[in-house]
Length: 143
Image 1 (tube, rainbow, N blue to C red):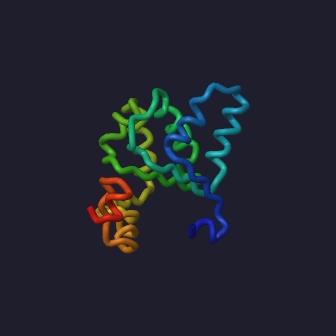
Image 2 (image 1 turned 120 degrees about the vertical axis):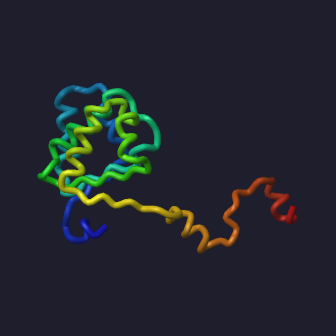
């Protein structure tokens, strides 16, 4: 939000949408237009790396984006998995290594530990954080 407020352009995509955007069969001009969408903004945010293994050729796609933005524009990527797992997640250790080499070159790695902020906000709004286990009638009757 701070980047947007200061006039920077920002593009946000989940890792799944990013990979899907590029792995669809399309004419070369469509692929170039798609790539430009990822290269143009001042800040690119790719979210949720590591939620599941990605399709084949995902590493190549991500590497091209990271390579072409490296030292030119800012890229932020979120992950809930250790960096050592990225080769397995991409199914391509050389691409993962090349991506991380560029990400870690001039980066600040922020590791967040503790409870999810979503769960913390839920706890503030409700003392009962357990998922309902019975029917609505059981809940009303206190069962």
